[in-house]
Amino acid sequence: MNRTDEALDIAVVGAGTAGLYCAWRAVTGTMREGSAPVAAPRVGLFEGSSRLGGRLYTVVPEGARTLRGELGGIALMSGHPLLMGLVDHLGLAHEPLSGGDPNNLFYLRGHRFTAGDWSKPEIVPYNLSAEERGRTPEQLLAGAIHAIVPDAARLDPRSWDEVKRSLSFGGRPLRDMGLWNLVRGLVSPEAFRLMSDAGSFRPQFENWNAAEALPDLCADWPEGSRYERLRDGYEALATALAAGVRAGGGVIEVGHRLRVIERTEGGEGGTARPHIRDR
Ligand SMILES: Cc1cc2nc3c(=O)[nH]c(=O)nc-3n(C[C@H](O)[C@H](O)[C@H](O)COP(=O)(O)OP(=O)(O)OC[C@H]3O[C@@H](n4cnc5c(N)ncnc54)[C@H](O)[C@@H]3O)c2cc1C
Image 1 (cartoon, rainbow, N blue to C red):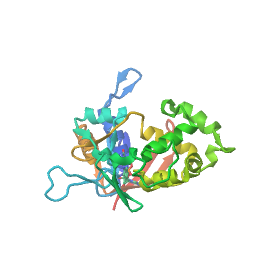
Image 2 (image 1 turned 30 degrees about the vertical axis):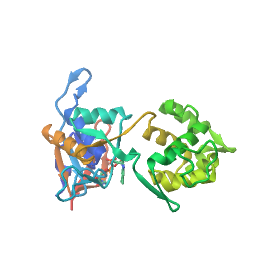
Image 3 (image 1 turned 60 degrees about the vertical axis):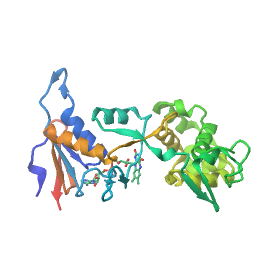
Image 4 (image 1 turned 60 degrees about the horizontal axis):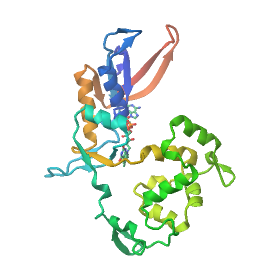
């Protein structure tokens, strides 16, 4: 089937969280031209795969009543007001995520200890400097970031742009460095190993651009934030948005992949004709 002939005001491609949210906003938001409300737009959401949700993917183990398996996104941060506001608006139940449970086990360098033991330097098998001892891997990373950008927690995106442009470390602009090159220069070798071995999110140590990584890490873990989870799994957010899109008159098609967008001249700004095909 070729859907290019169907008249839509808005075609959203990809039914991950971003696409679902855009389509949901388009069907539920008050669309205005100048100050007068305009007719609800005809919205189509096209997903290339066979399921909605993209990288939000929750599985329910057979027979489980409350247990959820997250194959994609897991945790919501309480310090992300837009996301938490959306979750509350949709009425999705959430609760603290027990990822920070002090009884969680670690097994590092042949030693078994619990998360509650991070504060006991005699138990943690890494030869840390005096000021690094007693800290969790996340606190070590936060300390490294604050060592180079002391007011990191309070910077807005515009201020970060300035930091990204101007900040150097060891005579090299941050924008020319990888994140791990930077962090390695800010902590002891043992602290670096510890972060790499036990940090909760290993991708931190893929060597992405340091100037881009710092604001991203700070935005990901706002100060004073805690982890939350959706009681029915993170994919419940996608399911609720999809229900809202349908209830608002939007059309959702799975198995429909965008192949090409053709731009046609003429009219006001020209038009775009997306070629979306089923498999
Ligand atoms: C293992 C893992 C753990 C994570 N942990 C967390 C976490 O704890 N907390 C958190 O907030 N986030 C987490 N994330 C990140 C979060 O899941 C993603 O940021 C978010 O789901 C991305 O949504 P998206 O809509 O931008 O992209 P996606 O979810 O990737 O959606 C894109 C969609 O577009 C479709 N598509 C692509 N090309 C086409 C095409 N040509 N035509 C039609 N459809 C197309 C894809 O099939 C897909 O469904 C995690 C991700 C992973 C993988």
